[in-house]
Amino acid sequence: MFPAFVENPTDCRFEGQDIDEKILLLLRAHPITNLTWIIPAILLFFVPFFVPGLLPLLSIDFSSLPQAFGLVFLIINYLLVLIIVFEGFLQWYFNVYIVTNKNIVDVDFHSLLFKNIDVAPLRNIEDASSSMGGILNAIFHYGHVFIQTAGNARNIDFHSVPKPHHVADFILDEAHKLYGKGRDAYHHPA
Image (cartoon, rainbow, N blue to C red; front, side):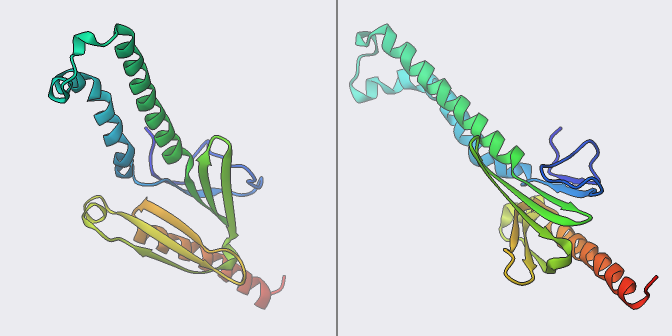
């Protein structure tokens, strides 16, 4: 439905993509990382079911509270659940990492009003490494990919992506293909 690892995606474009630029890899954080907002949303969803049972423990008579108070509490509670789910999904869905035949693109979606896009040309890639640490990372096979670029260019990090070792290797292979083309063109002029 919403994959986190897609090789050669179809019907997919990004802002600033060149006409001849082809997306080779589209990545998002592993879906298991969504538990950081799904679990609080579920717990908050069930709070209204437990509050009436907790009020007597706090020496509060539930029948003495105005009925409007309960309604306002429910509305605020479920609006908070909606906000947590909406913001969490947007953060996960729109924070994407893209590898093209020309560039590495890191789209960081911070809110509806702010996003940051880092682009590094493949020709500037010097090294790509990956790391996995922790039980969840090992079980679900996700981790971080660190991409080192040449010169003053900003390094790019892919956080919590599936198959991090494969991604790092893929990026280096694509950079080497580009370097190979450049060297052949230099040594063998047409």
